[in-house]
Length: 231
Length: 231
DNA sequence: CCGTGTGAATTAATTCACAGCG
DNA sequence: CGCTGTGAATTAATTCACACGG
Image 1 (cartoon, rainbow over the protein chains, first blue to last red):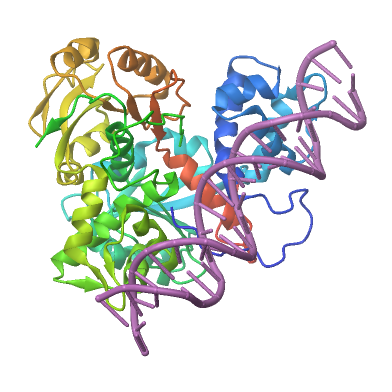
Image 2 (image 1 turned 90 degrees about the horizontal axis):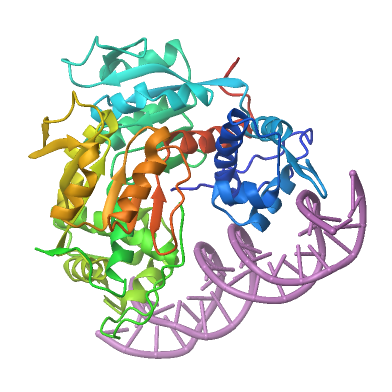
């Protein structure tokens, strides 16, 4: 995952949050998800211990993370699930609906466009683009696929900050350049290439085979020789 | 990403590698990919500076990472692309073909099964499982989709260490439990839940909306009010 | 000379452990 | 009395900066 400087220069000190560490930011969405499921199950209050177990982190880490946002727990009791959900949502800026465009609507792009988790977490797909003329015109989740050539036009009609690149590796950089030129400042990249972006643009990557390779590395270093087939 | 103890107790000291840090392990596949593209472009030698730029890391970090595997560079010159490719491949245990099963063959599962990057990085899909009877029988990348009920049978015929969970969130934990009981020790989880696994089982997760939420967090903390729509 | 390899310094993240509040 | 909130201690990761070898 590429992290670039992108420090906010000096926002008004309205929020309680003073510089939440990156590692914490990466866990907040997990907490949010766990809290949502606790609400569903009717849980009203939860201790850091139980919460941490559900989120698969240590209780100390959970408490430290939460304390960055403020003191929302009750000593001797735990956290009120609703209150906490509210505060983390606020910190993460949910309550807004964030428009995203997806470039590349192959099977992965289809999966993303149809993924309900997007909408439920405050995102809305407002544009779908694909270079394959056979896919153009298809409507996915209420949004028609438009030709990749119209990328600039789509972003002119409807400016967005966040774009998802799900194209083949070969064209990802070019697509990325065009997105950035059209005003996109944050990119989620599924193509297996390292995107080059100007400073100020934020890129995160998701790479399936990279994750598998990391898992495989650990398997190979295990004590017992496992179910592997030599080529 | 869940990292669990999983320290190899005491492998024979055959490899040069003595305890490669986790952060480095996570970058090695990136280096591998960059090297492969350098080979394609006919590059023979590369300096840490140029290599680092292509891999989007600092040159110091790259050199430190590579030095964990041994001294494969030439002072005053740089690294031989082929040599380095060979050594990192070896460290990552490429040269073996690693079997994986995919549980859940929705649009995401389809994308994964058809993803060429798997095969080219030494993985082979040897099993596809889905609970939907309408999908059973379909053949993807040469592998037939079998009913989820046969999970245990599939893993009995052909033991594998690594499984991909691409099911809906609701059944992911159950599938995970069954996989672990059937001998799987490493899981790549695409379902938006925190999987609970016994010690010794390694889980990594890929969560699209989590990544988007992190991007959105940073967008919201930017100086200028961006292209967001209030709900 | 130039660029690798690496100790030393720095910064970030995690864990410990316990004071103090409800 | 139990559990949060948090300084202090620890561990991990990154960056610096330069000695040294080709």
